[in-house]
Image 1 (spheres, rainbow over the protein chains, first blue to last red):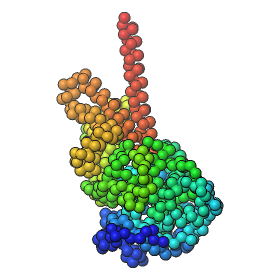
Image 2 (image 1 turned 90 degrees about the vertical axis):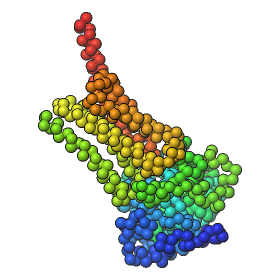
Image 3 (image 1 turned 60 degrees about the vertical axis):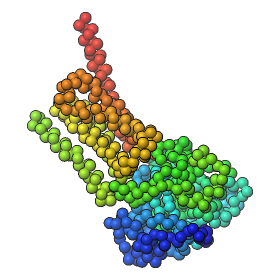
Amino acid sequence: MLIKTRKASDIPSSEITPESVYLNRRHFMAALAGGAVASGMSGNALALVGNPAAEDAGRPKWWRNAVEQRVDGMPNAKDSLTPYSDATRYNNFYEFGTGKTDPSEYAGKFKTDPWQVTIDGEVGKPGTFTLEDILKPHPLEERIYRFRCVEAWSMVVPWVGFSLADLIKRFEPTSKAKYVAFETLYDPEQMPGQSSRFSGIKWPYVEGLRLDEAMNPLTMMVVGLYGRTLPNQNGAPLRLMVPWKYGFKSIKSIVKITLTEKQPPTTWNLLAPGEYGFYSNVNPLVDHPRWSQSRERRLPNSLFDPNWHDTQMFNGYEEEVASLYKGMDLKKFY
Amino acid sequence: MKRLSKLLWVMWPLGCVPFVVLLWQGLSGALGPDPAKTFVAQLGWWAFIGLLLTLSARPLALWLKQPWLVALRRTFGLLSFAYASLHLIAWAWLLLGWDVRYIGDELSKRPYIIVGVSAWLCLLPLAVTSTRNSRRKLGKKWVRLHKLIFPAVLLVLVHDFWIQKSGYTEQVVFALVLFVLLGWRLMEYYKRRKNAQLAAFSAR
């Protein structure tokens, strides 16, 4: 399903991004087939298929097929893409360590199959389902979203997945459902960061959205990236992607989705309530107490040029989501 | 041992190695997709290590009974100041492009940056008066002035803790090392005071 029709102001991305940089499906598949290795070009947007995550080949067939059969969603980010090698080697996934390269180094053996997801709370049809059953009715789309980390860096990534709204509708939310709570797997044996003594984080990682935020067509459940199954370090097998919120809202390796009447607790808010709100919408006018949010470093950058971009309201998705917050004081509900 | 102390000059080229390696990594892409940020952070890390080494020189010399090691204090101290200055310059240049607006904003609004700059300001007079000449000229004042290393290193610790989002393992280790180094000095101080009191008492 296309998430929206193209607006007149939306110039197709192929016309804006230089042709040499823009990646259409055919180029991409050709690159995959050719096994193009471009790891030495990591300053260059062409270096898309540098050393793909090894686990892709071992993924179950139904997963690989689903990703393979994706259609183009709305590629509304007109920016050039962040190379695959950077999107998969510069990650915040504290379950595997707090260093940016820890996830790609330590998530290799993480087991994503079999995988089960529990859906409960205020739904008509609760239960625990295999990932295959979760995915089955949803055709997958590729959508290019800007990704803005709360640490003031950003990427542009082609995600593969489907609208969370379609999933929620399947399980028939009751009239009491006002929020959606998410939970990451808790498994310290596989996730060494969860047994770190000085992390300060209370595991498992939890996140939440207001129901209308969750039902917004932009809000996405992701199972793939760059035309491949989602690498472990990026939150395999199933993660959230809310492009107008800071990255930490987009919870990874989800095992539980609960519809609730009350606003659910969220991990970073529990850790530092003055710094990370429940909403955490990208907002250049509301600084993090310790640093400015008015700009972002678009990755990759270079030693002598941090590639600053002005941060956009709602990460540039104002048209799609601003109505959700009408009348709200965003300085108060940060 | 005298001969060994002549070898101390190797600490200077050795001390430049981290900077050269970092610069090479930053230019070659080995620092990852956000190299300026990592470069700045790493320089700060080395400055902190330098301060801890500076504070270790004297206890180490006493422990190993190698008095010449005390001379390392100056070398490490100056190297640490060099890294702290590079850290500050790299921050203002690579990350903020010497833009007065942004630098002013950061200096006035960001507490951990204010703390970091304060630490550097504590170290500045120590570096300036590090020559033998100054030491001779300042006499007792020199010793008192150089106690500024203690507020400096504590400010650096706060700065380092304050930057983190979570995951304080490294900071806790640094804090423990610092606790031992400062605790040892405190014990030494009380021992000396007690001895002085005893001496004064028996002299009466």
